[in-house]
Image (tube, rainbow, N blue to C red; front, side, top):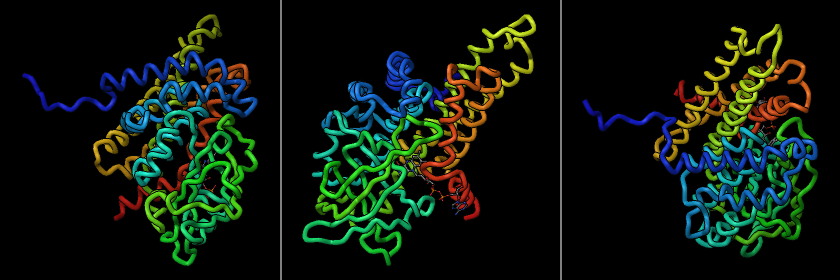
Length: 386
Ligand SMILES: Cc1cc2nc3c(=O)[nH]c(=O)nc-3n(C[C@H](O)[C@H](O)[C@H](O)COP(=O)(O)OP(=O)(O)OC[C@H]3O[C@@H](n4cnc5c(N)ncnc54)[C@H](O)[C@@H]3O)c2cc1C
């Protein structure tokens, strides 16, 4: 009997999804793989690689074709971040912030003027950054103190931002500031600020445990004048911009985490088939097989959560809880799977000549940024308890 109404499985991809995933994976193997170690050591993404990422089309996946972008869906961005992160999670982070936070926010909240000004650039050659966190406000993001004071047809911004991914490479920054500190979250307003604006400086770059090539910078904002036309959404509605983009962004972090876990599993499978002890390949030991099987099962479970959240988002269905679960679980899986991969490499897993210690370091960030694991648990529990 035929069943036309049977839904395809979450991991069944459409033709264009397969095409994008495979072409990004090929690109990552050919162009990224040779640079991974050097980028980690020098904590830098080379300019030539950025140019190639734009040429590949992965910096403007959802940007409509009329603005020079790929005109694709959020799910495509998830596939691209996963494929890149399997080879280098720092590049995964760069592409993730560009697509799931910056472009996403401008597409949804930008005026026609903002879209026309920035989308063509973001698709062609301009990196974006998303500046919400400050030294004193992380999980409690709306306790931010960067101040926007009205001034004629614009605002004057003062404050400091911390931990801003892509700070080194970006020319366009989404900066969250308050127009009224007494109003709490209702004062938060999102501004588009360009590098080079008087009073806007990119400060110190952090020296990190993992995703070292992804720049994480401080922003120093002193009497920086921003016209009203550069506001995303409305004054005082920046909290909505932040909440909605981060709800989606964390699916992107889930994609980064399943990429990392998949990368580590691939290395472990290959290595355990090659490495010989007690006269045979270590993959022939049942205990090792059990470890590999557990890793593969965890990667698959995490992928289903991430893909489901992304598919719900593209279908216009509620996805808040599913996105929180996807990020929570996939970041834990990435930590466990990369750790097991280090174990399976033995002493070789502990040194930089082999790829898995880096993936283990890279995995840790998944439990911290775009809402710590505790904050994901809070979101999930809220939904459970009503
Ligand atoms: C590499 C990196 C890149 C980043 N990129 C960006 C970026 O591009 N843009 C940006 O705006 N920010 C960015 N961040 C900032 C990041 O989002 C914050 O670090 C994160 O939200 C946590 O905030 P915090 O560091 O202030 O920790 P805190 O909020 O101080 O949290 C410390 C601990 O307390 C726990 N905690 C806090 N509140 C609660 C609570 N209510 N219940 C239970 N536990 C709680 C947390 O779970 C955590 O374990 C980045 C951070 C890093 C490290």
